[in-house]
Image (cartoon, rainbow, N blue to C red; front, side, top):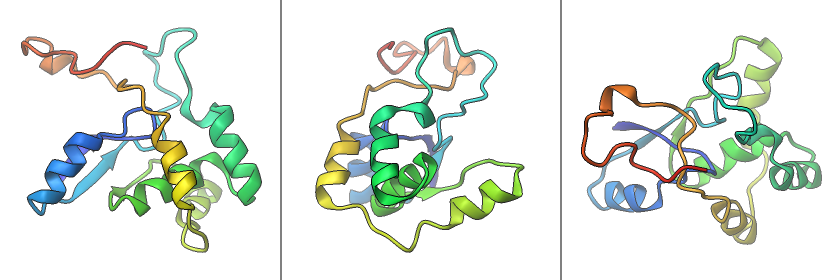
Length: 135
């Protein structure tokens, strides 16, 4: 098993396909986009505020977080969201009473921006850092 940042803005499709071909499970690190990250610049996207996710959530009578967690689960990822709020923890586990349609899965896949929301400063000397495009 390996942990990687993964959410609709960084869907890790190529890496997921490779890992699946090798029998490696992926844990989606920061699946909800770390909306409280102190290093976020003004105007940086907040995944849970994405209007497209909110539209799916409203249609399904779920929260954007539940849509994201269901999306990752259906892709075969282990998603472990962080929360200290009891109601959110309960809400985050309540994703097994629905499935996203193939069209919805494809739609959420289209949100990919190949953009990380977390900083990986310890890798800054790597020749391919920052391993993504900027927003």
